[in-house]
Length: 123
Image 1 (cartoon, helix red, strand yellow):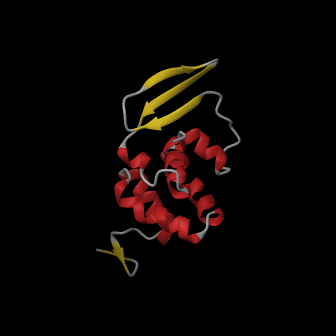
Image 2: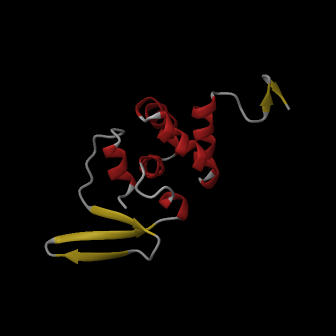
């Protein structure tokens, strides 16, 4: 499956177009020559391969590529652009994501209130 840079471009989160062909795999990282083209297969953690080629999986890879600093703004954009069912898939997979991304998904999905608050009061 395509890497995060290609996913971010496809989702309209960046105008950068990947120059190299990089695909994520659960296998080992390696480079292959296919005629004149060089293709890089890069090992990825299981959470980046979640949801495979579904649009929500593409969003996971894009967010991982963008990183913690840009994830919240990107998620706000995705929440507006993606069908609610697709955004719901992203929210459902959040427990499998790294903590920084899971927290950001929760924050955008459920509002700014922290999970350590109930009724606006700290618990």
